[in-house]
Image (cartoon, rainbow, N blue to C red; front, side, top):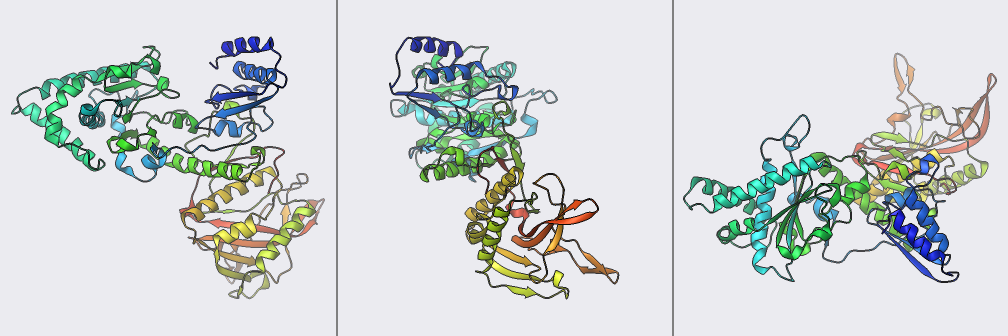
Length: 576
């Protein structure tokens, strides 16, 4: 229904109506996919996008409601775009819903790694059926035999999804392999009980049964009971290839025709394809283009399956499994951010775009994003703002914020070194939450690059607080009795970048009399240094002071707080 020719017909129909003042609701399902302007970076508009704009124009009294499970792209497009959302609501699933937390939030009972030797590639053509695929099929068929006796309205289907790659040739290869192994297992299970081949196959199913015992609580029938009906259940399982070669779609399936289904395919089953009562997923493929929203849409294994969760298994390549585990944190953080915008009644245009996202992934396809995104991770590293030629008003506001925060602290002077320029005040054990709330959120930066980096460090610290609310900080007030040190900035317009903030070590008597500012930290905890500096700028042969008593916050982040993040700054959004 979103094809541009259908939208064109709808626009023609509406053009003949008088719609001024007529309230209309436009619901755009899967709003992150076809609706957005895929040619924004080329200075032109995609056809579907243009038709949607025409539709909006023909309905002057309307609300345009975007609906999607993967909102990264609508959130990252230009906030001036007509399709950039103005408000947000986060829908909560029902009690029976199973999502990323259940599968990838730390419980590895339901996931399995497909080893590299069983991932098909040009250098690794598969000759035999992979062992992990055999295991996946055995777990699935045991689940089929468990549920078939109660097949009906309360137990409608049982299905398995095999998603090997984008190419139909590989789909056909897996489809044929599964057909062959299904027929072979039916033959062997109908042999005499004393036959060696049958005993070997029963032992393999016994191993799969033991795996199910670890996750299925009370309704798993005895193994011997399942073996008595397994051959017939396997024989009646329908195996279908779903791709453009076959031309199949979900609506082409008569799910009532059979209880058990195995579907083999690729992109045709990514988005909008309903796989009923999916229990086992086998996906021997990599992350592809690395778009987070695409990978999430590939996750057909989420859904309302709490009642049979113990029968579910997901077989993934190791990198993909790790990416899905990281995506859980990304999605949970994004939902928290959006709930906060909703609960505060703020417009989405005021929300600072920031995400937790693995370095292996992009938030969405680049073709719809006009403003650059910044990646970062302050791990075993220092953060401090670099563009320090701020306005006088911002400098005064930062001075007030730092003074107010320091007045609450009980400092102890570090007198290990005799020179005033090498003595610092220390306050240890400050709450990390207090540091964020009372100082960092009050400290302002002006340049977009510092805004993005500041959002990133705040995201890392917020995540650390969430993991452990008792996290503490070591806080240094650097050189409190020494007149403000001078630091040079590049003469590159009003927003000059600082050439060096932290003082290096000094030598005396053949050794170091001062180890340098970098040494003042706790390697395993957040450490903060508050510097007060005069900024100088080269004018001719002289260094001229262009700003006095500028407070600068430097933050050390230990390796254990590593977190990949993405931020985006768009013109017109307030920086703080």
